[in-house]
Length: 133
Length: 416
Image (tube, each protein chain N blue to C red):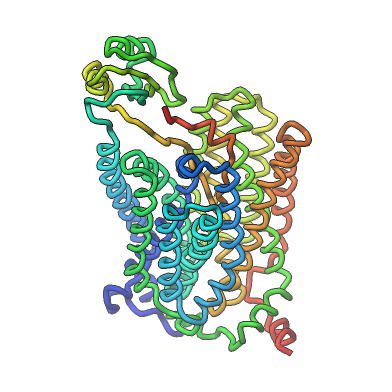
């Protein structure tokens, strides 16, 4: 019967779902790579920034790296390896990267978003996850 | 018996795979863009010096209009075709999003982020895509098609949130909003694959859909007990999900759980939701949908009960997140499937839209009651237990649903 050959018949439908999902994730990764690269601060940047260290580095090593870069660690964020740090000397962002930071950002509005069929602003959640330096 | 045409005999743009991919990409973008709105709370409020209430009211307006406009958008899709409605919806939605950076007064912001975006979401939503799927996919594949559409919507909120965050960080919030508006415009060519109105179903089973006016269909549905029960059931879905979405993170942190764990739990819910929605679509095609819905609501009630009774820990939070994620939007495919089964696909858009409106009312009450009872009692216990009670109510409500075409006698008496 012709109807059996329609997309969605068992394996062919699941294959379509997998290919579609993989394609979406690949496109997303590409867009994310570009945007995250563009979001990084230039090496000469100074001020209060977010320094991203490998999470495997540990807080003590990250703290030491920020100090060596001439920065004043202000606080860790809720995401492991990401610190708010301040430094006034020109080239601060570049020195952080030289000391092991994988990226230095001015503003990372990272937070969980699960709008479902209903979106709302809960100021408690906004404060909870706000990572702006 | 008439059989569906072979996919190979159809032009590329009419093949089921093309229709599914196009519909899923529309669902992904429409749901995803909306899910990233919350990220703009701080940047927009700070830029204009507004209290958070301005943003909150705009989103409340958006939610309300989405729910209110959904039956009308569905009725328009039934009459004028899903492609036209989706295209108009994408344009309205993109216009609303694009105008947000230029809305420098609360009034303009309510218009762009609230009204235009809300109406745009309703007219470019997964409800309209599922209406198109119901007409273009054979009955035995519909549940699967509803599942993949819901799953794509779920994936949208999972991928668009970090993308929106990266856009804001890289280009500023104004440009980020414009980029999201441009992404919505990409839906326009995709809508072409979803052409067809109430009389265009490609499947023999729908040829027997009775000739009934829009008003007659509405009266027919509202007099059919099983449909009314479905409307009540979906109210519970909205209540539970909205309450958990909004109030779970502060509940966890106030209970001593780290903010990172609370954020991780939300992310896990989002990811598990992608899987759960898809599985639900598959199961909906194999099992009685009413029992599947009963099981989902019972599962939610049991999961919440366990979550409340077991001491809070990272493990219990993540376990709850996985279970709730699997059950999150898994109600959508069997609910939509039952509407199509009861009344055919002729007025699927409007009739599912009414069910969805009930969902949005439940959502509003879940968020609102969560806040009100927290302020009065100092904790969320009452609303958590209310969610359990409503879950049990929904479990029972779905059991007597008659999983068959609504009786013609009801339609005839409604028409008379």
